Length: 323
Image (cartoon, rainbow, N blue to C red; front, side, top):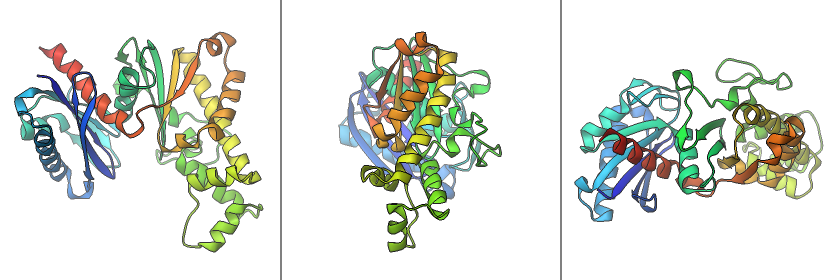
C-alpha cells in the first residue's frame, strides 16, 4: 500500500488530496462543503471525492493505506469523533467511522490546525526541527506543538488555543464568550476590525477614500496591507499594533514550549513583514535571551496544501502503529 489520502474539511470547502508514502501530493480536488445540508451529506460527498481521486491516480482502493481528515473545532482523535465544530454545526459526530464505512479505507481524524502544522513539520518549512510551534492566522488564530515527531494534545485534546489567550489591552468580545481574546485582534478579521474602527473614528486614511468609493464593501485585511504599502499611517499603525500583540502572545508559548522553530501560516500571514517585523521585535523583548537566540521563525512552505499532506502523513503513521 503506497498511497495515502488527506482531507481538509472547512466551513467553506472540502479539499481532498492523494499523496504517495513520502507525502508528495499527486492529485487534489476541491468542492464546497455545504455543511448546512448535514454531516451525512458531507460524508457522501467525501466518498465521491475519494472515488474521483482513485480514478485520477489510476489506483485500486486496496493501494491506499489510510485516509486522514482534518476538521475544525474540538476533536477526539483516539475515538475519531468531532466533539464540536461550530463552523460545520457538528456535535459528537463519529467522523472517522462514517468515512471509513463509505470508503472501506481505515480513517483517522484530528484538528485541522494540528494537521496543518504536522504537514509543515514533516514535509514543509519546519522539516528537520525536533521542537515545532506552528500557528495559523486566518479568520482566527490557532496553534499546535510537535515534540520529536509527536503532537502535543494536553488534557481534553485542547492544547494550542493561542487565540484565546486573554490580553487586557484588547477590548473585543470573542465568539467564545470571553473578552480580550488574542484572535479578536490578531487575525484577518481582527486586522480589518481595527482599521474599520479607526476610520470610523475620523482618522484620515486612504482606506476612508476607498470605503467612500465603494460604500457596499467592507475593509478587508488585504486592503490594510495595500494601504500599508502606500505608507498610509493608519494602516501602518494597525499592522504594528497587531504584530506587537502577536509577539506578546507568542512570548507565552515560546517560554512554555521552548520551540526550535515557529512556522507561521494562514491567509493573514500573507501580510508578511508588515506583520512579522513588529512581531519579532516584541517577541525578542518579551522572552529570556536564551529562548530567542536558539529560535528560528519561518513562513509556511505548503500554504494551502499543508493540511491535506499533514492529514495524510499522520494517518499513514497511525495506521502503521495499529498494525
